[in-house]
Length: 104
Image (cartoon, rainbow, N blue to C red; front, side):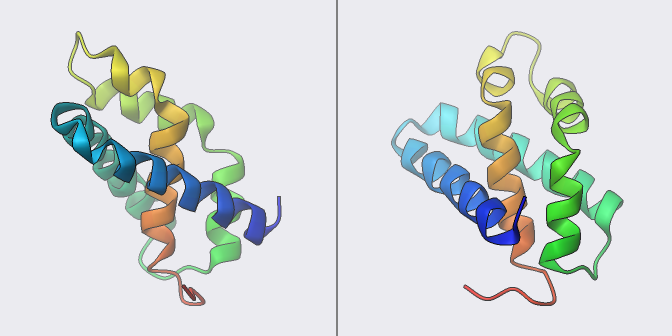
């Protein structure tokens, strides 16, 4: 996957979550899940990274992101689990902003 394609997916996920801001409880829940995935990215990727390195981690992140979302979602909240891909993309979009070669 190219960096441009990955960034497009990430940015689209973040935009979709931001559109949910009108649904306050759902939005807060999704943002808590995004924060959890960003925390895990920080552990896995570190503080200094390029967009290419982040895209490489993204390629193999589906399983561990699902685990983070399941562990972070309240027991009866299916919204987070159902929206795992959305949370994944939004978290990577947020974390991409810290890449050494990030350009808006």
